Length: 386
Image (cartoon, rainbow, N blue to C red):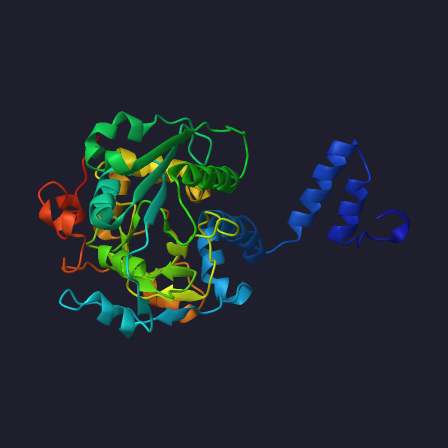
C-alpha cells in the first residue's frame, strides 16, 4: 500500500516476476508451474488421461488402425481374368481340354515341382503324394538360414529317408545362409529363389516343360497338373487359385490364394518368383494350408522365421498357451485386421474364422492317412507341445 496504491497484478504478472528469477532449471520449472496454474480440471484430464491413453492405444493397435484404413490409402490390384476350371473323374482328357478351349497333346509335358523348404515336413509329404503320379522331377532347395537370418538345421536332410518313394526323381540342393544382420527378410528370400533357378538347371528342365512355382503349403490338385500337362495351347503362365485354409482344413478362409503358378518353361524368360506374373488365373486348382503344423514349437519357429516376422510385435504372441487358444478359436496369430481393400470385405471378415465340417475334396493321401494327420481335419484343433 505504499504511495497510496494497492497491488492489482494478475496471476500471469506474478508468474512473469517469478519466472524472471533464478537459474535456467528453476526458470523452466517456474514457467511450467505458471502454465499449469491457469488450467482447469477438464484440461488436466485431457492432458494427463486422454492424451496418454490415445498414445498407448496407437502403440498397441496402430497396425490394426492402419489395416482398417487401408481402403483409404491403397487401391485394390487389377482383377484377374479367371478361367473356369472343369473336372470330373469320368471324363476323358480330350473332353476336359476341349471344355477349357485347349487342344490335347499326343503325349504329356514333363512336369517339375520346385519348392523352398523350411520346416513343413507333414505338408511336404501330403503335397508330394498328391502330385507323385504326374511329376517328372521333384526339386527342393534347403538353407541353413531362415529368411530372417536365424540359423536352422537342415531338417529335410535329416528326414530324407522318409521320402524314399520320390528319391529316384529328387533333385535336392542346399544353400548357405548369408546372415546379414538387420537386412530385410525379403532380400534373403529373393536370394534363395535365385538359387532355386540354378537348381532347376541342374535338374534338367527344358523348354516347354511345365514348372510349378509355389510354397510347400500351396498344393495344386493332382487333376489340375494332369490337365495342364496334357492340354495344348495353355497360357505360358497361369496363376492357380487355391482354397485358403488356416491352421488345418477345419478353418476355410476364402478362395483368394493366387501366388502359386504353373509355367511353360522358357529358358530365356522364366525366373522363379512368388509374385504376380500374369492376369490369368485358373479357378479352384488346389489348396493353401497356412500355418498347418502338428507341434506348437513349429508355429513359434515360423512366426520368427518367415518374411513377415515384423508382425510379432509383442513377445507374448509367442506364448504356447496363447497360440493353442488362437488355433482352436480360429483367430489371428498376430491379432491383425483382415488384409482387404474395401471396408465391406474387412468388416465381413472381422472376428474368428467359422469352422467348416466338410472334408470333401481334400488331398487323397491326407484322407487315406486320416489317423496320422487327424490334426489337419475338422474337430481336431489341439496341437502337440513338442
